Image (cartoon, rainbow, N blue to C red; front, side, top):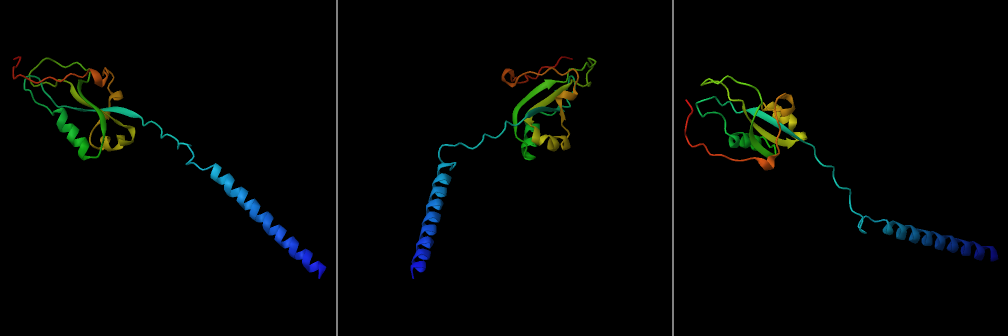
Length: 150
């Protein structure tokens, strides 16, 4: 009978130790909880690239594709851009009515959208050897007054 009593005592002692160890484990896990002021990691900055497409404008005829038309094309394709500007490709063109002007529409997009814009006919401005980049903040907008040179 005495052995039975000792066996029960051991059993309850082991159960108490297990409950105490479990309590310590729960407390330790709660102390490491991310809700206690630990902030999740900040996502990496997305790389941006500038792409262009020819405006198809010709000298003397005030034609070509406006910047806002191409901007709508990109929006319709689901491409978000952070900058849009009219620029020149930096190449030399003969001064003849009907010749190209070298005007291009430039958009700054996220690099993840590069395959999409390439399917739409855009290319990276890095492919233009004479292109001179300028920051978007210095972009000026002009309205054509209707006058012609020729």
